[in-house]
Length: 398
Ligand SMILES: *[C@@H]1O[C@H](CO)[C@@H](O)[C@H](O)[C@H]1NC(C)=O
Ligand SMILES: *[C@@H]1O[C@H](CO)[C@@H](O)[C@H](O)[C@H]1NC(C)=O
Ligand SMILES: *[C@@H]1O[C@H](CO)[C@@H](O)[C@H](O)[C@H]1NC(C)=O
Ligand SMILES: *[C@@H]1O[C@H](CO)[C@@H](O)[C@H](O)[C@H]1NC(C)=O
Ligand SMILES: *[C@@H]1O[C@H](CO)[C@@H](O)[C@H](O)[C@H]1NC(C)=O
Ligand SMILES: *[C@@H]1O[C@H](CO)[C@@H](O)[C@H](O)[C@H]1NC(C)=O
Image 1 (tube, rainbow, N blue to C red):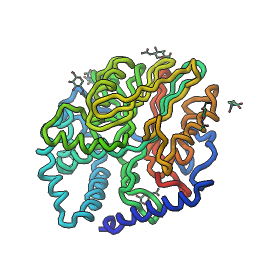
Image 2: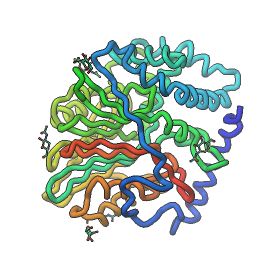
Image 3: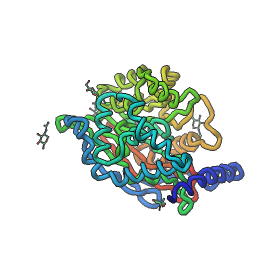
Image 4: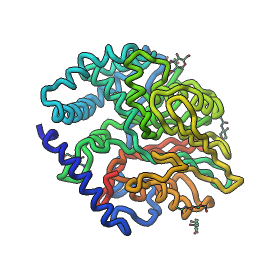
């Protein structure tokens, strides 16, 4: 039982980091000049490659994840156990976990096809109870902190890249200054090639055990990433409504996967992302295959608040989205937008490429202690790559 003792440390550590940040605001050691020549990835900010798996959509949903989960179940059980320990530290009687195991599956009722069947298959192969697999899947709907960028070069060639940051406040490890959940996610990060008739339908980067999609590309057609949007009228309400039986909203990770699987064009994808009622507020970052096809869609659960598009002819050759509405200032202690924008400005449109985009995502604090992976997507050249990341000290916690 090491983690329950450690968890209160997370809050203390977060408070300490916050204070240090305020005190050292002028030149905190965790910001740095825009990085150069970091690609191909190497050195201390590169943890290693992400393994590829094929998900055969012609198989019954129950069977699709067997190979991935067989390989990844020790890692999946490890992260589930660590999160359980954190929860039990707050609820020592074990009541919360008992509720998750016994009541959650019936509270959530039937999840849409094919996701529920897929999760049942994952639960059976991994030995993790269905309620815990379900909560693991909900968890990603609510806590993804990220940076997504779409940029186009002078020739109209598009690049879509993102850092996936996950695990804030979920256990701080004082021994080596890392977030427990962030670290636990790295060994279960997978690249997925979803196929029908032995042909790729879309590619994605995900965490083993999660059946939705947060980062993906449909070859030749579009690229899509999700960033969390925190809002008072947010995802918790959506989930409560769902449990109360109002089930017209779509889970965002499921919508992303549905769009990647079934939308046939950039416009079709955009339309679905704008119009579908969703369970939690979100930013959808969508890129296409040709000049000007790139937008950030700011969503409330029911309405679309804003669609911000690339306008290369007017000089808007890139879009940056973190976790804040573009018309508002980011939270002062979490400004990844400005450093990313500054580095893109310095790169210039002449020199934007997959490699120079990786430089931007390797610059602290765009790269931070929560960064699990960096994904690089180049639709016109049909390139999809992802890399596990580390952020050695000095490095900000988020
Ligand atoms: C920190 O230590 C934990 C537990 O020993 C380990 O899982 C993790 O990979 C380490 N992280 C880093 C960045 O060294
Ligand atoms: C896919 O390829 C495998 C082996 O190459 C073959 O056995 C199988 O019949 C193919 N499936 C389809 C649906 O074409
Ligand atoms: C995407 O763009 C590339 C390069 O311009 C082109 O070769 C390819 O045909 C396009 N793909 C589709 C599906 O339009
Ligand atoms: C995509 O569409 C097919 C056919 O309508 C449907 O069976 C499948 O479930 C859809 N995919 C997702 C992920 O919703
Ligand atoms: C980046 O360049 C744009 C356009 O010149 C400018 O409006 C913006 O302030 C710059 N941002 C940063 C952070 O340098
Ligand atoms: C763009 O790249 C070229 C070739 O590497 C280099 O000479 C030039 O200085 C770069 N421009 C900027 C603005 O960094």
